[in-house]
Length: 272
Figure 1 (spheres, rainbow, N blue to C red):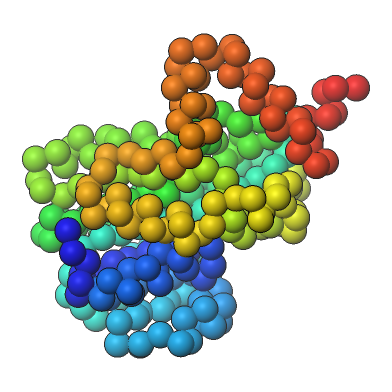
Figure 2 (cartoon, rainbow, N blue to C red; figure 1 turned 90 degrees about the vertical axis):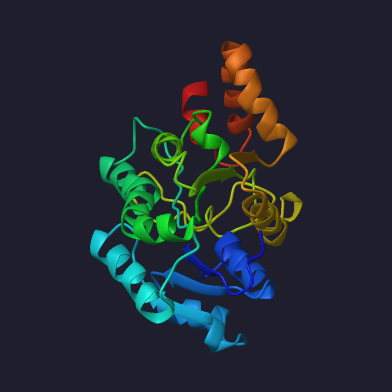
């Protein structure tokens, strides 16, 4: 599938995977519509690119009206939509015992409801173009991660929704898929929410050893071109998915021990 002159819609595109995806699609000749909550940051990220191929908008995907307006603006400008990439996302790191429930609501509003809203309003155009809906998910959508209860819940919900939608649309020519990057160098961990809902502003991972956002974007674009069903990008991720089905108790312990080793791991509370 060629993306030349296709209309690609990407949420959460001011940094990380979303920004890399946008640049990758622009290189294919696509027309790209991008949204983020911070328009200044979004404009700064794409100041060097051809405005004829770009549409930049402020939108908070947790708000239904923003998603509807974003989709309608794209259709008013270009008349069609060939792909929607639901990339906007938020993470967290806190024990469920300690977390403010508003943090989990926020994650569900952005990661799950944001995907639902975008799909709802873009779906007529996607059906018309026989296009693609994509969810940028996580291994956390296959395997619950400690101190990430809200994040895992939102990604499980996203994947269940997209799988149901894919089955509904099976004979329409439209396609639905999700991709699960492994640990990727992006801003999501720096903005991950703490127990009280503040940004952690630190990452527990060695970012220089992670997959780059650019490599992740390349793999997503290739998967979209091939209309893959799902993509789990790393060996570690593939092992986690399959071993969790075969020997779940073993994986419980492995996952616990992995996250216990994080700097300032919340799990250390239970080790005393």
